[in-house]
Amino acid sequence: MAASPSTGPRADQPATDPPPIAVAGGGAEGGATRSARLRRAVIAGHRGDREDAQALVGDADPAVRAAALGALARLGEWDADLLERALADPDAGVRRRAVTIAGRRAARGTIGTFSASSDTAGPADRPEHTAGPADRPEHTAGPADRPEHTAGPADRPEHTAGPADRPENTAGPADRPENTAGAGDADLARQGAALLAATADPDPGVAEAAAWAVGELPEPARPRRAVPVLAAVAGGHPDPLCREAAVAALGAIGDPGGLQAVLQALNGKPPLRRRAAVALAAFDDPRADQALHRCLADRDWQVREVAEELLGSGAGGAGLDSAASDAGPDSAGPGPEPTAV
Image 1 (cartoon, helix red, strand yellow):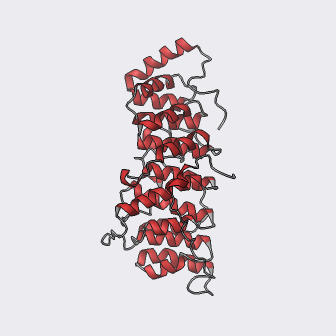
Image 2 (cartoon, helix red, strand yellow; image 1 turned 60 degrees about the vertical axis):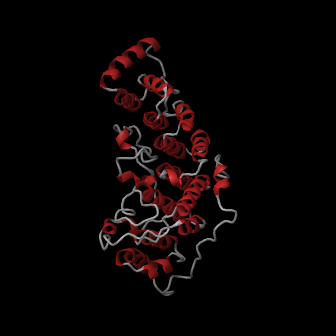
Image 3 (tube, helix red, strand yellow; image 1 turned 90 degrees about the vertical axis):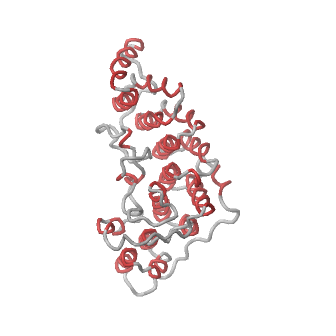
């Protein structure tokens, strides 16, 4: 993909791009094996070894660099400088890891502080947010797109597989005092601008995670251009998962300026229509209510189910019967004839 349709975020970047993370020959111990360095990076986050984690973030191996980013986040060393440097990394997996960490921290209100769970659970592990792209090719299996099943981009295979996300990453000395360094408004704004810029990343996995993360940002950290940029991604990104993540993020933000893009998404394929139906709950607008009533006649049963739940148990059956009788048995509902997913 040569370029993303959402070129807007570049306006929010600093005039000078941050320097990429320096890549060392093999970590502090040049002769150490990759597995040993990877293990050191993970352990550093549990033992409070900031020096080791900072050294390994410049390792030659991308998996080690990604694990070191997680360790630094666990130790409360996350700030805009680190995020910007990580987003300049040549490896897409490292960039995606950085975006996902920032999104997780934003979702928990810890974007500039340390939290025991800030880097131990991904968007797919949280039932509470209307984020993006957890429902991949298995979209049609079960009512996964109900409002309580709207997770983020943790199900796309990571480029930087390794022990950083194994269950043992939730153990260790997590309950230390919070480190509030970097929690100022300026730092938050820089992180938000960096995440919005990442929606234009040439790697779809990074762009998808970034769209989700922007939807998680607290208002002080959300760039003013966030809604139009997400609307552009939702309406024109070549990757369907990026479009889904952007629609979900618009629903998470709930700004009236994003409603038109969500309504337009109801003309997409079933997975996008499900995201849009969930996102409509965030908008107090007659057009959103009308669109939900049209969703009662959608050919995809999960879209219909979301609409029934959002409109109330009584509205579902009556509205569906009325819509079906008006439209006829072959009506395609608010979207085109769905294809197999």
